[in-house]
Structures are given as C-alpha cells and as structure tokens.
Length: 463
Image (tube, rainbow, N blue to C red):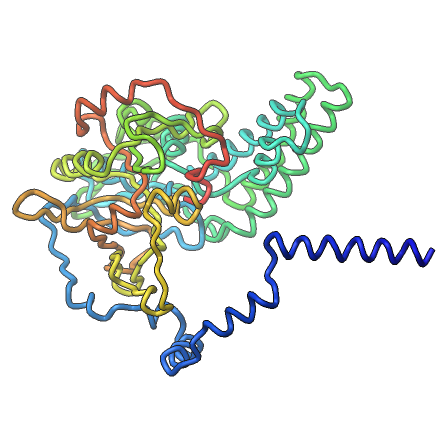
C-alpha cells in the first residue's frame, strides 16, 4: 500500500513539475519580477497616492478643464431630462426620448414624457416568453449545448436595444407618464430581476423535464402559458397592471386644456407618433474588428420571440457620422450607444480621451486599438443615449457632440459632451432615419445578413 501511495505522489509531483515548465509562475520568475520592480521614490509615491486617493483622481488630467466649450453649431431642441435611476433601461429611456421629441415638435406640445414603466412591463413579459420558447426550441439538445447554456445564463435582462423599442412600442403602444408612473421596482430593477430569473430558470427546467418524459408540443405550450401567467403576476405586483385605456388632456404652453379624449395605448401612439419604427430606420454599427459594408444579425439579440434580432450595417465612422450630422441639421435626434464608462469625467459630463492619463499613473502602455478592444472583450456597447447636437468647424468637420442622457441632472445639466476623437473610439451603434443616409448605405442594407451567435462580443445585454 505504501509503495502505491509513494508512486502516486511521485507521479503527481512530476505532473506539477511539468505544469511549471509549461506555463506556471516559478520561483525564478517571481524573483525576476521583484528584482525588476524599482522600489524608487517615484514608485513609492505612486503607491502611497493610489492608496490614499484612488485611480480616477490621480489619473485625472487637470489641463482638460481649460479646454471645455459648451457651444454647438447644430442642436436639436429637447425638453425635460429623464432619469433611469438604478435600472438598466437606458435603451428604453433613449428610445422614448427620441420619440418624445418628435411628438412634441409635430404636435406643438410644451410638455410630454412617455411611461417607461408601461413599456418595461411588456418588455419583461416578452423576454420571458422569448426565453421559455427558446428552451422549448432547444429541448432536444443536451444542457451542455452552448446555445442551451447561453439561454440559462441569460434568461432575462433589463438591458436592450432599439429593436426592443420598435417591437414593444409597435405592439403595445405608449402612454403618458402620468397614466402609469414609475415604481420603486422599476427604478431599481436588480433584486426583482434576480427573482424573475430564478422563476424562469426553474420553469425552463420543468419544460425540458417534460420534454424528456415525452410531452408533445401542445403540452409544452400549455405549460409555457401557465408559466407566463405567473410571470405576469410577478410583474403586475412589482410594476402595476398596464392600462388598457385612459383619458388624457392635451394642453397649450400656458397649461390651458385644448382637448380631452379617451385613448388606448395603441391609438395614443398612432395619433401622436404613428411612424413605422421597423421600416423607416437603419441601424448602423462601427465595428472595425469585422468587415465593413456587410450586414450582420445577432441571434437572440431581440426582445420578443416574434420580434426582430438586432440587424445592422457595419460602416466606417466617416459614413456613420455623415448620417448623424444630416439628422441633427434637420432637428432630428437619434438613438445611439457607446462604451460610456471609458474616459468619462462624471462631474463635468465630458467624454474625452485626454481626461485621464492612466499610462503615466501606472508607468505602462495601453496600446490596443478599437478592433482589438472589441475582439478581446475589453470594450463593448454599454449604454444607450440620445445624440442631439454637433459642433462643426469651418470645414464642416465635427469637433464635439452633444448627448442627452438619462441619469437625471448629473453631468452637464443632464447632458454629456463627447469629443469627436472619443466618439471614434467608443461609439458603436447609431439608429437613423433612412432619409438621412447615403445611397450607398441604402443599397448595402439590402444584403442578406451574416448571422452571429448569441454570445457575440457585441451582444446587447449590458446596454
């Protein structure tokens, strides 16, 4: 017995030694790290400062304060900053803000906000159905299948894209904020989302178990309907029941009543908006890690089972910005998304590559370009906002951009200002009306999409 244990120990030791040779950190390597680290006064000062003040304060470039200018040569007039608070609904706030500005301009409304809570209710119900039906569709595959794993890892989210705005608004309409106000759960979604995800994961397992026992399609659909009833109940308790009709009064700039009517959410949408969100808009992407002038579609990157996946044309930044400038010049704001956390001065509301000098602070070089950051998961679309202004130089080239945010009055009185260089590096998606894009884009968008998997780098769950 002792001999066998000794042999096993020696074999294990040999395996560990082989692992060290193949890539483990060895004592010799560690000694080299220690010897190369210069314990000089500069590094001691850095260490002490980092522990006392933190990274952002020490990396901040004070010189950029003197460069700030809030003049914009072209600006879309908007009224009323919204606040998504502690929720991931930026995509919904942005989409409804874009629509709100259109409705106010077209109908001369001094004040209007749409209920995010109303549309969020149906977004979550539709996403629950998308997950459960996806489980049914893949119920013949093993749990280890990558698509099945992805479904159970991502049963539901409060993030999304403009596709969700188009699908949910077109199907369920809109209502004014006063008809279905925000709730505490809507303002802070994380706890409820965890419980809803647990509910859905259990339901998904029950569907797979029923399929394994021979349940037919009809039985599975009946199970799903019952499960969705439970989801509806949870949503109604947390968010309130959505209205099926309501009475609303249109008022002038002095608050005088002009007209009082009874609407359904769909008739309200048709009267005050009515635009074809699914066919009138083009979704552009700047992803230099993939070939330009190709159309891509991300599987399951949608909000409803019968909705549309995020489908976009990948174009160079020059073409994307050309369309954006035309839209702003025509007083039309746009939905766009970016990696907002990079080089953001939250206090001033400025996005500038020169805001922070991380290289000087850590005495190292960060050399990845945009394509490399995307392909290595170092950067992706994380936040949707409303693009509402641009400042052009004498040659018509953009210097900076004005962005309406949904973080309340934070930043630059509710707005962010982004340098053009920052936009080149961290803007990803832009949704623009077809009438503002070039003939080349209109032709290219007709291609058959290249389908990307659900786990693609630019999937929208965090937007």
